[in-house]
Image (tube, one colour):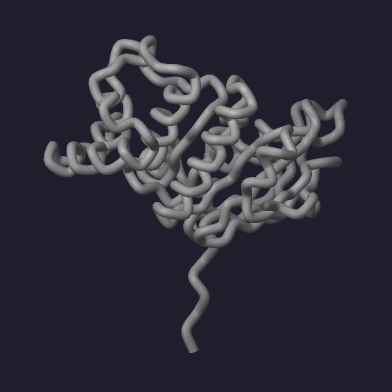
Length: 231
């Protein structure tokens, strides 16, 4: 009998507090992300969404509990190993875009491949494949200052997925966009996660954004609970 592949991401009994005098931000939280699944996590400001995302990425460590990525216990890895894991297995999309203003669209998208030491031929072919997929064909040589907000976030999505990560983490990726552009970017994000065979976690306060995911969870009281049905 074949065994089931491990989840891409699993959190078991994860707790995090910032001082002994305050309640825990996360309190025995459990979460499992299946391969190919795209999950939205909602919650009010200050409930710990960013803390949870940082823990998932191995940027912070829990006070208790276990976090596994592809079956690997993050707490058992040293800083260099966690950095390598993020570089090779994670993609990130942020509200503030974080594209480099002095690089062209092509070179911004290629950054993860450059960091991974990919051969030039592979680098170029991956970038040339990604740009049309996110609607940026013909903008290869443009600089961020020449792009709209929606186009800039498309650059960020292409950069996050060009190295074919197993897990994409998106933190309020449409917070700086108007509703129409946000809808286009969210649809693109969903379609590209599925097209790449990746798994994704979307952190958002917006129900409209969350409904583009396969499943919605709400963070409250330090734990996750099912939210409204996704679209």
